[in-house]
Amino acid sequence: MEDDFQDAKQTVNLDGTQVRGYRAWRRHATLAMAAYALLAVAAAVARLAHPAPVLPDDADQHPPADTGMVPLSVPEIQRLITLALPRQTGSGRDIEFQVRWSHWRRRHHARARWYHYRKRLMPVSEH
Image (cartoon, rainbow, N blue to C red; front, side, top):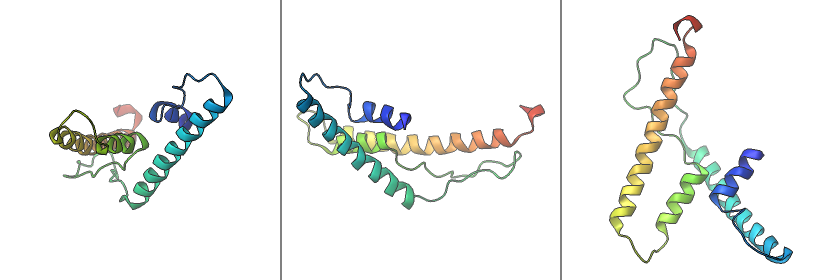
């Protein structure tokens, strides 16, 4: 629960209001939580459609050529939605770069996870 609250504060700016009255605070908090709920549902749907992670079976296994990608997270979906919104400045090249960066980061994260799991399979004396 604490992680979700911290994530909501960072992702949808739940704590970033400077209102004076309860009514304005309630409106801001309601809108922020609705936005976070939408992002959380989108991430859960993406996770369900995502294939199972590629993980090692033993400590001596060599890494596969393709470890896959991690599923989309709430902050990643928020970044991609923000990219899709019209801006006054910027170009399509920025959007292409950000999408490629997201793809690379998710692949890199999956590869790092594979090595982390392999390291955890090693006996204690080999660490």
